[in-house]
Image (cartoon, rainbow, N blue to C red; front, side, top):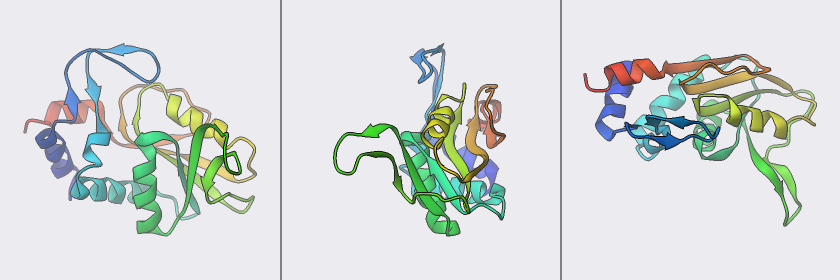
Length: 172
């Protein structure tokens, strides 16, 4: 599915809510971009994973995410591109074996890309980075589906769409 078709599908399912909402960062916005809604549609989820896969450096051995925004994408990308799956919790688990990382535990031989749905301030990616701080693997950057804001991150990032591309083309 082309990027143009993905945007058309976003419009069909209504991922843009044009009403005031509180964002994860605590900021108030006059609209919300609900990429997670798109995860309920296999054609769109698969197409997003394909687009992210095109941006994965060959050296990457693992994909990581935290929260609902990144984890569905990471699961699909892990399977499609044979990359190890890292789920990073927002806080350490207080039961079982505890810990903050589920799935594969990276080693110093690994190279990681963080995946997320929407980047506004970068708080989700920063949470994922914080969970990975004690590992020895190289964190190679991040890829997000939608770049909504200008985030200052300690790693480089790329994106599939800007928010303006979606808003300006969703009804076409």
